[in-house]
Image (tube, rainbow, N blue to C red):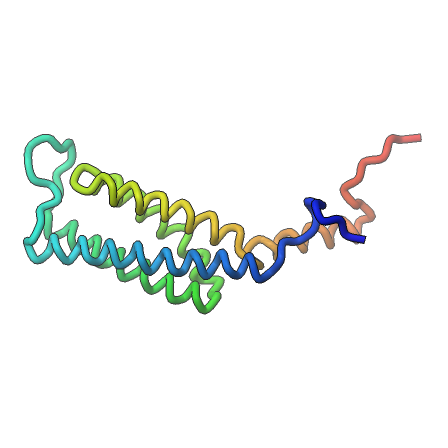
Length: 159
């Protein structure tokens, strides 16, 4: 009999699938934000690195293109996450880390939005890493290997 609070009881698949769909929605939203920021910088409507107070120097147009490409990539990965792609899950881990680093550079101009997107990236990372089937393949091989070798993970004192 399975106990309700048993930590070894698997979580309901629908909830884990919901986490992945939530991550996909967040990816599309944060990708759109990066796309809009990049477009605004490229068209000259805003300047990201104006003034002498920044310790880094970047060409505004180049940084705008970085944001456009990153935004398009994030939107595309969000779409692939909707479809449940394992490839998208793996690449998303790398891309959300890059996106978070990108937001640190944008923080002087957009502190609230940059912080919000960094938080969204962390939530996406959590949702992808805890999604159904992401880590299950490795865990299943480990458990099967223990069963074949006679080890169950329980330690018994030598008699």
